[in-house]
Image (cartoon, rainbow, N blue to C red; front, top):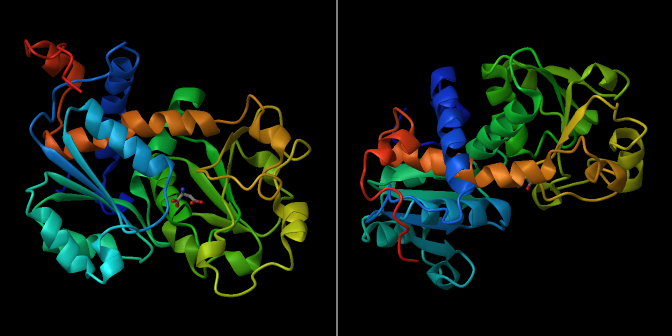
Amino acid sequence: MRRHLLSVDDLTREDIDRILGLAESFAEVSGREIKKVPTLRGRTVVNLFYEASTRTSSSFELAAKRLSADLVSVKAQGSAVDKGESLKDTVQTLSAYDPAAIVFRSPHAGAAGLVARWTRASVINAGDGKREHPTQALLDLYTLRRRAGRLEGLNVWIVGDVLHSRVARSNILAFGRMGCRVTVCGPPTLIPRGVEALGCEVRTTLDDLGEADVVYALRMQHERMDGTYVPSLREYATRYGINGRRLGAAQLLMHPGPVNRGVELSGEVIDSPQALITDQVESGVVVRMAVLYELLAGGGGSPARSQSRDPGATEPQPA
Ligand code: ASP
């Protein structure tokens, strides 16, 4: 695997398999009372978030802490960015701490690639505008494989605001790479032109939703809309909202969060046993531990095995 994780395109199928395997090992660690291993002791991880986040920032924080790294979290709001410091200057300032990794989120497509040019740290793209969110795709693969027992051959429908969704882009690539058949569906105004080139089919109605094994709903990304894309949210919910009538008993339901209840999903499906939404959040920690391990500790082999050879491995680390 490369030094940075900027896009799902940085990952081969073998890389993805290895990361999912590592995440399984870390799930075992997460089941322990003391959920900590010394793998990244003495290394520094910087979380640099220029955009709102609950799940991604908290799970990266927990992942770094459970690997015993020193963690610095910087949110643009309240930092020197508010005083007009440029991204390059901020990155160079934080790089003075010699971090092993910078986890970076930005509202601008391609910004993570720029950061990778300005630092010696490994850069992990935690969402860059509407472009990509590779660790979301990895945790979705992990969650789905755990529940369905396989990925190969699954029929996945990604429904909603595909146009503004970095999750859609990363997941089309990731599900496709692992042998799923991917269909995107939404109002024509919210389907990017040429999206088929990423390896998916396009539908503009839910008429054939019954063929899906997995329904992956997307949030309406109002913060990235510069105009009106649907007549009204009520109309959108009527035509594209996933509810108990539309979701078949054998279909699984995923959503990256945050959910707009009553818009893309009805309350009954969010709380149904078919929904994997909280499993996705839970998977975020172990998958992000696996990504940090893979990039910073060299990967290759099970961390649980390698740590059992390390006499300090099971020692809890001071908080
Ligand atoms: N949390 C995901 C993201 O950061 C999805 C969303 O915000 O709708 O892209």
